Image (cartoon, rainbow, N blue to C red; front, side):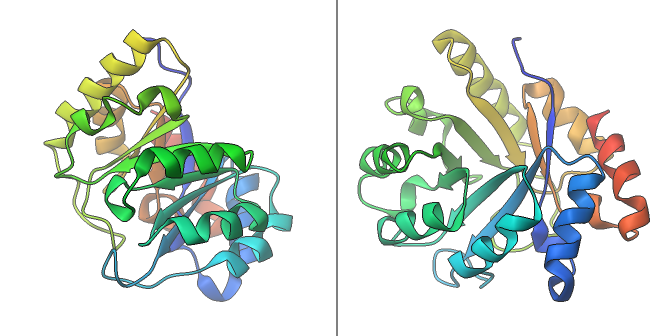
Length: 220
């Protein structure tokens, strides 16, 4: 396998929303590689979180990559707003718009890294004609919408299949996994081929004094 070093991307979904700027600074200083921002619209997924204004407000609090996962539909009308707000990686779902290839092209035109996310029931084959157009693949190991869910082990086979496809293509594409990540499932995801992990509950558990230890434990 030709994975890159494992990057940890704490999901602010599990942070204290009343202190979001402080929380982002705290996980940044604790060793986070990226900051993961879950954007949900109450339509594409059953929860409502934040919009571009919050991304813009958080941008000055970290120089790390803002890893923005858009779980919204329709997706295309919002790409420019999140790019302007300071997102570095914009990840979208194939089901969130009629033309995923066009959506990925637009993200690239905006000067951002383009990611595509696969829900648990979305097959790896969905990537067959778009893998060369993406910078990141995000495998959802829970059904998106809420934090604190249990890891769906069938996704390990999908991670392995995507790892093989990325290695065959030979492009440095990040393979990220999100959902139910803790010290044990992190090991499973990494051994299946993941090189970036999203962790909400596992990062923010125990308060700021624990963040560095939590992040270090996830790296294995």
